[in-house]
Image (cartoon, rainbow, N blue to C red; front, side, top):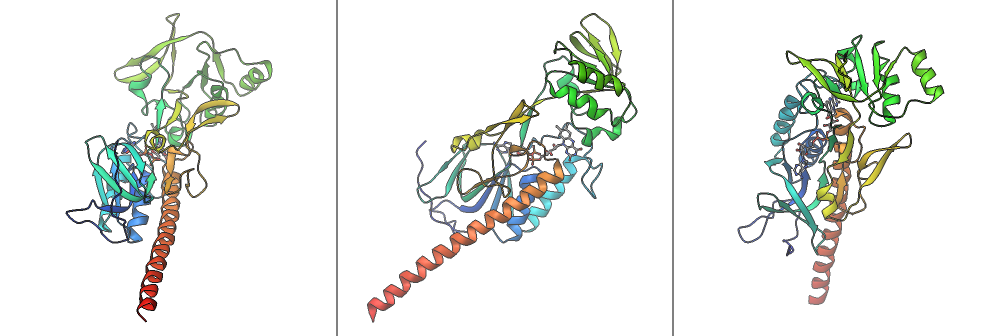
Length: 344
Ligand SMILES: Cc1cc2nc3c(=O)[nH]c(=O)nc-3n(C[C@H](O)[C@H](O)[C@H](O)COP(=O)(O)OP(=O)(O)OC[C@H]3O[C@@H](n4cnc5c(N)ncnc54)[C@H](O)[C@@H]3O)c2cc1C
């Protein structure tokens, strides 16, 4: 791709018919992290544009839990409110998918969208989230976020005291079984071809009353649109009200990778559970001018944590822009002084 440098930006709108508009910040991804970042930047009087593909991770869930003051809200309602708040301060939001980005010679960025638009910004905040790659068991993908679950803090209360199955596709399942036992005393661990737990682990499962079922799981058994149980390859159906799985968490990192920002493996208790984009606590990546927030850099971040990270990364982005504004102002005033001295 041939890329030319746009006109350098200031905090004001630099757009003319002849030059591309250079936003202070383009936020890639308009979930909780991105919209919170955009709100902070818009309130800092920055020219901010959010490009959002509109597929937040928790879209399959009907309710969002654990967000103080918003507990139980429709996840889509939170984002709709957030979009309105960003717009109220002059922030702009456009529907679209960013395919790639490139650094320009002046230090700014060009962002290319799938619909062919090229956009420009001084800095990028990438909040593209992650993809939950689900185990390939028939019925799992269809029921994800309803009665096929992962996070007990999101869904545990709703299935408390019910029959919960845990599908073992990695050693993480042993941890999940003990975790979900906190919410119900009816937990069944389906080994599904995984190695049998070692003696101490088995003793711990037995001590907490977790049932262990050997043999592969064939499919979910659904009756009248509701999960009825787990069907084993033997044909036996073990009743369950909910099934816990361990997705692979893959950072949505294509835009960052196009900039040369790399991902790393996310390891939990010695098991690789996915990828993330490393960053410092303020979202700084290995590339100056590009910050990240939310699930793309922190697989553990629930909505409120993703929102908080977006605010922090946005504040740090604004600080970088202020430093750049000062640098440009000093360079400009030095030039003016020199011109004045030259005249005298
Ligand atoms: C089933 C389920 C239920 C959950 N329930 C809860 C709950 O009850 N409470 C809770 O706190 N957390 C819950 N979570 C976790 C929650 O989904 C995350 O904490 C939250 O979505 C993280 O926000 P984010 O902004 O980082 O990413 P996301 O919400 O995933 O937002 C990322 C946005 O970026 C967009 N995007 C991605 N790539 C591009 C691109 N290239 N160009 C433009 N846009 C792009 C996406 O379309 C999306 O709109 C749940 C997760 C799942 C899977």
